[in-house]
Length: 311
Image (tube, rainbow, N blue to C red; front, side):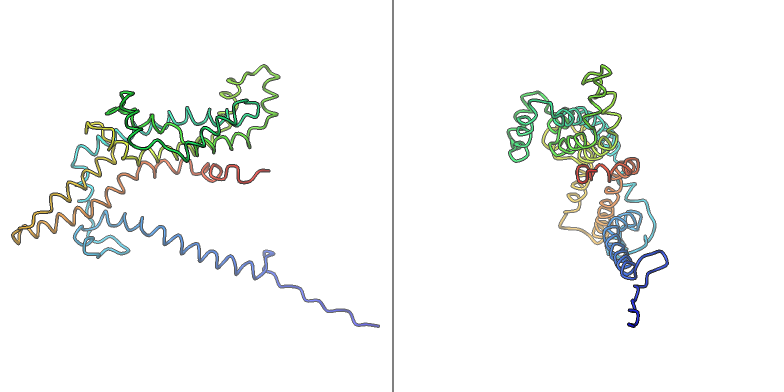
């Protein structure tokens, strides 16, 4: 009679996971925490530097906590009336631009997602060609000038009214999340294409719409190159142009080569304030996007992962 075989069971944690799983999760947690700190520290440094003494900031005395709390950087930024005007212009350009983007991108993406659209293939090829071949700055400027849009708001929102990448994201969303059976059922109830799109497709597209608002909104808010090319009237400048102009003026005012000791001391103070203004300007220009993001955060992961997994 043979002795029964002895088997050893792998010891598992109380929650039903092995030691290897626990160790792996611990290492992963530590690694991701370090990555988070590396990524978050520059933003944290900008925030504390914007509230610290400008001379201490210029000398590199700020590391983890603000030193000599002051609002001089923000006062220097907002003492210019042009900043508030630029804020208002940027908000208007962003709101109008995003509205135009949504009105063109979402219907285009839906139309190209329909399998029964006979011109779907050629139109998609036409759009994809523009991804690899662009007109260039000078031809684009000549077209904008011929249309009479130079020195107007429309020069900032019309040329980039639709982005092929965003349109492809919308098309993928509609093709994977709006089943054909839903359209067939709507047609049986006498619903046409327009009614189906406005009453059924759009309400079901909150996730991709929120992602489009984020993508296009950030693009319009941070854009200054188009304003630099097309706008001549300073009253129409967006915020990014005003901030750029403030930094350039501050750097030009401190280039006098011959100075008295008092002037050198004042120059050092102005240089410190100008250095701190950079941090204040970053915070000022980032606030609207930081306020917008929490409202669409729940849609962000779903929108970014559109088309990656189906089932």
